[in-house]
Length: 200
Image (spheres, rainbow, N blue to C red):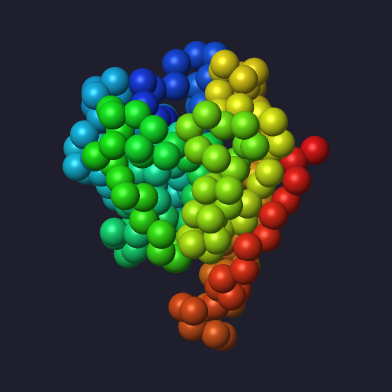
């Protein structure tokens, strides 16, 4: 089965964060251990995540906050990494805190794999308008979570089954894209059109 790599953000994702719940409840979900989560270094984190991707080719990435930004940086810089899809939850604006400023600027290029951005309308780490802009630039589907804060423990997100549903939807989209490639070539992804889904 396809592995899901769980990518935390600044200060990690200690229990009862939904990322810890996900890793504990799904055999094929693997948490990515990133060095010094309280003092992240982009180059180090990229090497560590890249190593995990190389060990689990064809994986699906699930990132939260700075982890979502890290994934976008990886996919934009190394598009030939064998990643099936990516779920980017509550990406963090890099100029919000000095500890993550060196992760900027956030890339604004189309990503070559199916991606979904999950954003909140009252996230203190990134405005909904900015998340929508990035989703459009990346060619991602956008999921509107409404007033969900930073989609973390502080905003009530421990177990989060909807996240797994979004991952499964991404897996189906990636499989459909792969099936189209022999007919239409590697440019078989749909046009860069933003689709917004409202979370219920």
